Length: 156
Image (cartoon, rainbow, N blue to C red):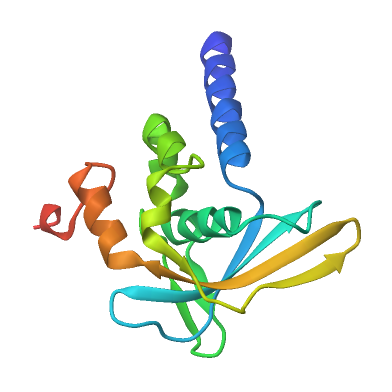
C-alpha cells in the first residue's frame, strides 16, 4: 500500500512539474463576445521578466480554455473548461507536452489582439496582460478527432 501511494505521489508531482514548465502561471477572464466559434479573452501571465513573448500569453489562454474555464464579469457568465477538467491533461501527458511546446499546435487556435498588451509591476513580479481570440470550435473539433476529449456524439 505504501509503495502504491508513493508511486501515485511521484506521478502527480511529475505531471504538476510538466504543466508548470510548459505553461506559466496565469489568470484568464472573458472580455466581451467574440465572433461565432471564438472566445475574446484577457489573459494575464505572472512573471519575473516583463519582456515575455506573445507565445507565453497564447499558451496560457489555450490552457485556460481547456482546463480552467473563465468568467466574464460584465456579462455575468462562467464558461466551463472545454476539456472538462485537468484530469484530461493528466491522462494524456505526451499529447499535451507536444501540444504546448514552443512550436506546438496551440498556436493554431489563438490570435493576439493588436495594441492590447499591458505590463503592471506587482511586488517582485510583473503581470503581463493582453487580449486574445481563441478559436474554441476548431480546438474542440481537433481534440475530438485526436481522441483526447469526447465529442457530443459520444453522449447519445
